[in-house]
Length: 331
Image (cartoon, rainbow, N blue to C red; front, side):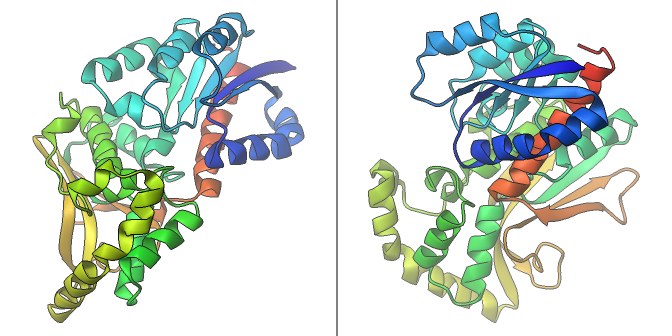
């Protein structure tokens, strides 16, 4: 029986769910894969840096590092784990959507041992589909869609007449938002996802290269997260009028990303209600792949794009791929 040792960074909402799913399925995994999953270390932001480095240095192989944080400080840990021959599974988008040089470094170190299906579309097979399209020598014309289940949920609520502040608070309570809701409402979370997809298309692009207009005034960025939520009602009338004006045109508001080989844009758009994106409801994501082969009838992936359970399930799916590689001796 082979053992896969797990080192986990970020035991928050998604991290806790991952631990629960792995624990519940532990015995079944032994029978199905002949691999025993062993949680060795679980770290939060309170753990000292040297403690985490020591854990990576001393953990037995084969091992996997899971990053379910929302931190931009985990790149050294991921790189160290990959250098040691370990696997890495990322939910955290920041290591791959920071500097291009860091994206390149992690891929050069990790290769097939670096997994990050959940960085776009939670548990939806977006990254895998894109890699398969590229691998089969198809040509991407455009990737378009709603990449944020959080914003999808919020704007669906606005369609029903819910006030903006109430919709945001409801999304936060359901666990759809990032730890700081401004990461969603600023649009930066969608930009990070679009950036990762663009880089997979071999584009050399930095975060600041993508134009973005957020969903709240810049001055609110200076508030604490708690005060920000308290001040949300100040935006209620603005969005109420915007939604009503859009409805009169027979359209709906959706936060849309477009990724093409030579350009990338993200922002709020008025969309026809009859379109695939316009008919999208709730926290579902919808990603449209228009390629040379899928030109007249694009390939569409649709499903839950937010929520701790589906995101954790995506991590679990990546863990199963790691288990197969461990069992096959590809360590």
